[in-house]
Amino acid sequence: MSNLIESVKFTVPLTADASQLAEQFSRCQKNSEKAQQIRFNTLAVYAVNFYCQCMEIETELDKSYSWNSVSRALMNVADLQIKDIGKLECLPVLPNAKTCYVPPEVWSDGLRPTVGDCPRGSGKANRIGYVVVQIDEEAWEATLLGFVAKVTKEELSLSQLGSLEDLIDSLEPLNGVSPVKNVILGLEQGLVRLNQWFDGLFDGEWQPEELVFASSVRSTRSADESEVNAAKVMRLGIQMPEHSVTLIVRQRKLSEEEIDIRLRLYPGNDSLYLADGVKLSVLDEFGEPIPSLSAQARTDNWLQLQFTGSPGDKFCIRVTLAADSITEHFVI
Image (cartoon, rainbow, N blue to C red):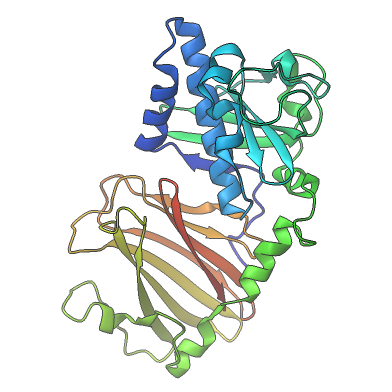
Protein backbone atom coordinates (compact mmCIF):
# COMPACT_ATOMS: atom_id res chain seq x y z
CA MET A 1 0.00 0.00 0.00
CA SER A 2 1.28 3.46 -0.78
CA ASN A 3 2.24 5.46 2.32
CA LEU A 4 2.37 2.24 4.38
CA ILE A 5 6.01 1.93 5.39
CA GLU A 6 7.68 -0.38 7.85
CA SER A 7 7.88 1.01 11.36
CA VAL A 8 11.24 0.81 13.13
CA LYS A 9 10.11 2.77 16.18
CA PHE A 10 6.91 3.05 18.20
CA THR A 11 5.66 6.29 19.74
CA VAL A 12 3.31 6.36 22.73
CA PRO A 13 1.40 9.47 23.86
CA LEU A 14 2.23 10.43 27.45
CA THR A 15 -1.24 11.27 28.69
CA ALA A 16 -2.14 13.15 31.85
CA ASP A 17 -2.82 9.77 33.49
CA ALA A 18 0.72 8.60 32.70
CA SER A 19 2.25 11.79 34.13
CA GLN A 20 0.11 11.59 37.27
CA LEU A 21 1.13 7.97 37.83
CA ALA A 22 4.84 8.82 37.45
CA GLU A 23 4.39 11.75 39.84
CA GLN A 24 2.58 9.54 42.36
CA PHE A 25 5.35 6.91 42.35
CA SER A 26 8.13 9.49 42.74
CA ARG A 27 6.43 11.78 45.25
CA CYS A 28 7.54 9.92 48.39
CA GLN A 29 11.26 10.27 47.55
CA LYS A 30 13.06 13.09 49.41
CA ASN A 31 16.11 12.75 47.17
CA SER A 32 15.32 14.68 43.96
CA GLU A 33 17.67 12.54 41.85
CA LYS A 34 15.98 9.32 43.02
CA ALA A 35 12.54 10.86 42.43
CA GLN A 36 13.50 11.77 38.86
CA GLN A 37 14.85 8.25 38.30
CA ILE A 38 11.55 6.71 39.42
CA ARG A 39 9.60 9.18 37.29
CA PHE A 40 11.45 8.31 34.09
CA ASN A 41 11.42 4.59 34.87
CA THR A 42 7.64 4.67 35.37
CA LEU A 43 7.06 6.47 32.07
CA ALA A 44 9.30 3.96 30.27
CA VAL A 45 7.40 0.99 31.70
CA TYR A 46 4.09 2.68 30.87
CA ALA A 47 5.18 3.09 27.24
CA VAL A 48 6.37 -0.50 26.84
CA ASN A 49 3.21 -1.82 28.49
CA PHE A 50 1.16 0.26 26.02
CA TYR A 51 3.14 -1.25 23.12
CA CYS A 52 2.56 -4.77 24.45
CA GLN A 53 -1.18 -4.13 24.67
CA CYS A 54 -1.16 -2.96 21.06
CA MET A 55 0.65 -6.14 20.04
CA GLU A 56 -1.76 -8.29 22.12
CA ILE A 57 1.04 -9.42 24.45
CA GLU A 58 -0.25 -10.07 27.98
CA THR A 59 1.55 -8.24 30.80
CA GLU A 60 1.35 -8.36 34.59
CA LEU A 61 2.19 -4.96 36.02
CA ASP A 62 1.40 -6.07 39.56
CA LYS A 63 4.19 -8.67 39.36
CA SER A 64 6.74 -6.14 38.12
CA TYR A 65 9.35 -4.80 40.56
CA SER A 66 8.84 -1.32 39.10
CA TRP A 67 5.24 -1.33 40.37
CA ASN A 68 6.29 -2.23 43.93
CA SER A 69 6.97 0.67 46.31
CA VAL A 70 9.75 -1.08 48.28
CA SER A 71 11.54 -2.29 45.14
CA ARG A 72 11.39 1.19 43.61
CA ALA A 73 12.90 2.72 46.75
CA LEU A 74 15.75 0.22 47.12
CA MET A 75 16.66 -0.46 43.48
CA ASN A 76 16.84 1.24 40.11
CA VAL A 77 14.11 -0.86 38.49
CA ALA A 78 12.10 -0.39 35.31
CA ASP A 79 10.91 -3.90 34.55
CA LEU A 80 7.69 -5.16 32.98
CA GLN A 81 6.50 -8.70 33.62
CA ILE A 82 5.37 -10.49 30.45
CA LYS A 83 2.87 -13.16 31.42
CA ASP A 84 4.29 -16.70 31.49
CA ILE A 85 7.54 -15.56 29.84
CA GLY A 86 9.71 -13.22 31.91
CA LYS A 87 10.72 -9.63 32.45
CA LEU A 88 11.52 -6.82 30.05
CA GLU A 89 13.76 -4.04 31.32
CA CYS A 90 12.52 -0.65 30.10
CA LEU A 91 15.48 1.73 29.97
CA PRO A 92 14.66 5.45 29.72
CA VAL A 93 16.81 7.96 27.84
CA LEU A 94 16.39 11.65 27.07
CA PRO A 95 16.05 13.05 23.51
CA ASN A 96 19.32 13.16 21.53
CA ALA A 97 21.01 10.62 23.81
CA LYS A 98 23.66 8.43 22.17
CA THR A 99 24.02 5.91 25.00
CA CYS A 100 21.82 4.44 27.71
CA TYR A 101 22.73 3.73 31.34
CA VAL A 102 22.03 0.15 32.48
CA PRO A 103 22.05 -0.41 36.28
CA PRO A 104 24.35 -3.32 37.24
CA GLU A 105 21.52 -5.08 39.09
CA VAL A 106 19.63 -5.55 35.84
CA TRP A 107 22.49 -6.81 33.65
CA SER A 108 21.86 -10.11 31.92
CA ASP A 109 23.81 -12.00 34.59
CA GLY A 110 22.75 -9.72 37.46
CA LEU A 111 20.84 -10.88 40.55
CA ARG A 112 17.76 -9.34 42.08
CA PRO A 113 18.17 -8.77 45.84
CA THR A 114 15.46 -10.27 48.01
CA VAL A 115 13.15 -7.58 49.39
CA GLY A 116 10.51 -8.09 52.07
CA ASP A 117 7.34 -7.38 50.10
CA CYS A 118 8.76 -7.61 46.58
CA PRO A 119 6.65 -9.31 43.95
CA ARG A 120 6.83 -13.06 43.89
CA GLY A 121 10.10 -14.47 42.63
CA SER A 122 13.43 -13.15 43.93
CA GLY A 123 16.87 -14.12 42.82
CA LYS A 124 17.90 -14.33 39.19
CA ALA A 125 15.31 -12.80 36.89
CA ASN A 126 13.99 -14.62 33.85
CA ARG A 127 14.95 -11.61 31.74
CA ILE A 128 13.84 -11.45 28.12
CA GLY A 129 15.93 -8.41 27.29
CA TYR A 130 15.97 -4.62 27.24
CA VAL A 131 13.85 -2.00 25.48
CA VAL A 132 15.24 1.54 25.30
CA VAL A 133 12.58 4.25 25.58
CA GLN A 134 13.15 7.91 24.73
CA ILE A 135 11.17 10.15 27.09
CA ASP A 136 10.21 13.53 25.65
CA GLU A 137 7.95 15.24 28.17
CA GLU A 138 7.88 18.52 26.23
CA ALA A 139 6.29 16.66 23.29
CA TRP A 140 4.18 14.51 25.65
CA GLU A 141 5.43 11.30 24.08
CA ALA A 142 7.69 8.31 24.62
CA THR A 143 9.35 6.46 21.74
CA LEU A 144 10.49 2.84 21.85
CA LEU A 145 13.85 3.02 20.06
CA GLY A 146 14.76 -0.66 19.91
CA PHE A 147 15.59 -3.89 21.70
CA VAL A 148 18.68 -5.82 22.80
CA ALA A 149 18.66 -9.27 24.39
CA LYS A 150 21.77 -9.03 26.57
CA VAL A 151 23.71 -6.34 28.43
CA THR A 152 26.82 -6.87 30.59
CA LYS A 153 28.02 -3.30 31.23
CA GLU A 154 26.68 0.04 32.40
CA GLU A 155 26.78 1.89 29.09
CA LEU A 156 24.77 0.68 26.11
CA SER A 157 25.28 2.42 22.78
CA LEU A 158 21.98 3.10 21.04
CA SER A 159 23.65 2.08 17.78
CA GLN A 160 23.70 -1.49 19.13
CA LEU A 161 19.92 -1.70 19.41
CA GLY A 162 18.00 -4.14 17.28
CA SER A 163 14.47 -3.53 16.02
CA LEU A 164 11.24 -4.10 17.88
CA GLU A 165 10.75 -7.10 15.60
CA ASP A 166 13.71 -8.65 17.44
CA LEU A 167 11.73 -8.26 20.65
CA ILE A 168 8.71 -10.02 19.17
CA ASP A 169 10.93 -12.82 17.83
CA SER A 170 12.52 -13.28 21.25
CA LEU A 171 9.23 -14.06 22.95
CA GLU A 172 8.47 -17.72 23.36
CA PRO A 173 5.36 -18.99 21.56
CA LEU A 174 2.19 -18.58 23.57
CA ASN A 175 0.04 -21.70 23.35
CA GLY A 176 1.95 -22.64 20.24
CA VAL A 177 1.24 -19.32 18.49
CA SER A 178 3.60 -16.35 18.56
CA PRO A 179 2.26 -12.85 19.39
CA VAL A 180 2.74 -11.76 15.79
CA LYS A 181 0.74 -14.74 14.57
CA ASN A 182 -1.94 -13.89 17.12
CA VAL A 183 -2.25 -10.48 15.48
CA ILE A 184 -2.39 -12.03 12.01
CA LEU A 185 -5.05 -14.49 13.16
CA GLY A 186 -6.99 -11.59 14.62
CA LEU A 187 -6.88 -9.92 11.24
CA GLU A 188 -8.28 -12.99 9.52
CA GLN A 189 -11.11 -13.27 12.04
CA GLY A 190 -13.64 -10.46 11.87
CA LEU A 191 -12.21 -8.68 8.86
CA VAL A 192 -14.32 -5.78 7.63
CA ARG A 193 -14.47 -6.25 3.84
CA LEU A 194 -14.57 -2.82 2.30
CA ASN A 195 -15.35 -4.02 -1.23
CA GLN A 196 -18.74 -5.29 0.01
CA TRP A 197 -19.77 -1.77 0.98
CA PHE A 198 -20.13 -0.89 -2.68
CA ASP A 199 -22.86 -3.56 -2.82
CA GLY A 200 -24.64 -2.16 0.26
CA LEU A 201 -23.36 -4.93 2.56
CA PHE A 202 -22.01 -3.67 5.89
CA ASP A 203 -20.24 -5.65 8.63
CA GLY A 204 -21.11 -5.67 12.33
CA GLU A 205 -21.96 -2.24 13.73
CA TRP A 206 -20.87 -0.36 10.62
CA GLN A 207 -23.67 1.61 8.98
CA PRO A 208 -23.96 3.99 6.03
CA GLU A 209 -22.68 7.37 7.15
CA GLU A 210 -25.95 9.17 6.43
CA LEU A 211 -27.79 6.87 8.90
CA VAL A 212 -25.36 7.59 11.73
CA PHE A 213 -25.41 11.33 11.07
CA ALA A 214 -29.04 11.56 9.98
CA SER A 215 -29.51 14.97 11.60
CA SER A 216 -25.97 16.26 11.39
CA VAL A 217 -24.11 18.43 8.90
CA ARG A 218 -21.13 16.12 9.31
CA SER A 219 -22.52 13.69 6.75
CA THR A 220 -21.26 14.31 3.22
CA ARG A 221 -22.81 11.47 1.27
CA SER A 222 -21.69 11.37 -2.34
CA ALA A 223 -23.96 10.48 -5.24
CA ASP A 224 -20.93 9.14 -7.05
CA GLU A 225 -21.18 5.33 -7.34
CA SER A 226 -17.40 5.09 -7.11
CA GLU A 227 -17.53 6.34 -3.49
CA VAL A 228 -19.07 4.75 -0.40
CA ASN A 229 -18.93 5.89 3.23
CA ALA A 230 -19.73 4.14 6.51
CA ALA A 231 -19.50 5.05 10.18
CA LYS A 232 -19.30 3.32 13.54
CA VAL A 233 -19.78 4.63 17.08
CA MET A 234 -17.05 3.52 19.52
CA ARG A 235 -16.99 3.79 23.30
CA LEU A 236 -13.59 4.08 24.91
CA GLY A 237 -13.19 2.97 28.50
CA ILE A 238 -15.38 0.68 30.58
CA GLN A 239 -15.47 3.12 33.51
CA MET A 240 -15.85 6.26 31.36
CA PRO A 241 -18.46 5.43 28.69
CA GLU A 242 -18.94 9.16 28.08
CA HIS A 243 -15.77 9.06 25.94
CA SER A 244 -17.48 7.94 22.76
CA VAL A 245 -16.29 8.76 19.26
CA THR A 246 -17.56 8.17 15.75
CA LEU A 247 -15.19 6.75 13.15
CA ILE A 248 -15.97 7.32 9.47
CA VAL A 249 -14.30 5.36 6.67
CA ARG A 250 -14.72 6.87 3.22
CA GLN A 251 -13.44 4.98 0.20
CA ARG A 252 -13.35 6.04 -3.42
CA LYS A 253 -12.32 4.00 -6.46
CA LEU A 254 -9.60 5.87 -8.32
CA SER A 255 -9.19 2.90 -10.67
CA GLU A 256 -9.68 -0.87 -10.58
CA GLU A 257 -6.35 -1.21 -8.77
CA GLU A 258 -6.29 1.91 -6.59
CA ILE A 259 -8.64 2.85 -3.76
CA ASP A 260 -8.46 6.14 -1.87
CA ILE A 261 -9.17 5.68 1.86
CA ARG A 262 -10.05 8.63 4.09
CA LEU A 263 -10.59 8.25 7.83
CA ARG A 264 -12.30 10.78 10.05
CA LEU A 265 -12.78 10.64 13.81
CA TYR A 266 -15.46 12.84 15.41
CA PRO A 267 -16.45 13.33 19.09
CA GLY A 268 -19.58 11.59 20.31
CA ASN A 269 -22.35 12.48 22.75
CA ASP A 270 -22.94 15.81 21.01
CA SER A 271 -19.51 17.04 22.15
CA LEU A 272 -17.81 19.77 20.17
CA TYR A 273 -14.26 18.51 20.73
CA LEU A 274 -12.47 15.21 20.93
CA ALA A 275 -10.99 14.35 24.33
CA ASP A 276 -7.37 15.51 24.56
CA GLY A 277 -5.03 12.63 23.81
CA VAL A 278 -7.40 10.63 21.63
CA LYS A 279 -5.26 9.07 18.91
CA LEU A 280 -6.20 7.75 15.48
CA SER A 281 -3.66 5.36 13.91
CA VAL A 282 -3.32 3.05 10.92
CA LEU A 283 -1.41 -0.24 11.36
CA ASP A 284 -0.14 -2.65 8.74
CA GLU A 285 -1.44 -6.20 8.42
CA PHE A 286 1.02 -7.41 11.08
CA GLY A 287 -0.24 -4.90 13.63
CA GLU A 288 2.76 -2.57 13.29
CA PRO A 289 1.94 1.16 13.53
CA ILE A 290 2.71 3.29 10.48
CA PRO A 291 4.39 6.51 11.66
CA SER A 292 3.13 8.64 8.78
CA LEU A 293 -0.47 7.61 9.46
CA SER A 294 -1.17 8.78 12.99
CA ALA A 295 -2.94 11.80 14.47
CA GLN A 296 -3.61 12.87 18.06
CA ALA A 297 -6.25 15.27 19.32
CA ARG A 298 -5.26 18.55 20.95
CA THR A 299 -8.60 20.38 21.34
CA ASP A 300 -9.66 19.27 17.85
CA ASN A 301 -13.15 18.95 16.39
CA TRP A 302 -12.03 15.97 14.32
CA LEU A 303 -8.99 14.02 13.10
CA GLN A 304 -8.33 12.83 9.55
CA LEU A 305 -5.94 10.40 7.87
CA GLN A 306 -5.73 9.48 4.18
CA PHE A 307 -3.89 6.85 2.12
CA THR A 308 -4.36 4.69 -0.96
CA GLY A 309 -4.41 0.92 -1.33
CA SER A 310 -5.25 -1.92 -3.69
CA PRO A 311 -7.88 -4.66 -3.55
CA GLY A 312 -6.76 -7.39 -1.15
CA ASP A 313 -4.61 -5.09 1.03
CA LYS A 314 -5.13 -5.54 4.77
CA PHE A 315 -4.74 -2.90 7.46
CA CYS A 316 -5.96 -1.93 10.93
CA ILE A 317 -7.42 1.25 12.37
CA ARG A 318 -6.80 1.88 16.06
CA VAL A 319 -8.47 4.49 18.25
CA THR A 320 -6.71 5.06 21.57
CA LEU A 321 -7.39 7.07 24.72
CA ALA A 322 -4.94 6.59 27.61
CA ALA A 323 -4.74 2.83 28.26
CA ASP A 324 -7.94 2.03 26.34
CA SER A 325 -7.91 1.18 22.66
CA ILE A 326 -10.21 -0.24 20.00
CA THR A 327 -8.84 -1.88 16.87
CA GLU A 328 -10.76 -2.59 13.68
CA HIS A 329 -9.36 -4.92 10.98
CA PHE A 330 -10.01 -4.29 7.27
CA VAL A 331 -9.36 -5.74 3.86
CA ILE A 332 -9.83 -3.58 0.80
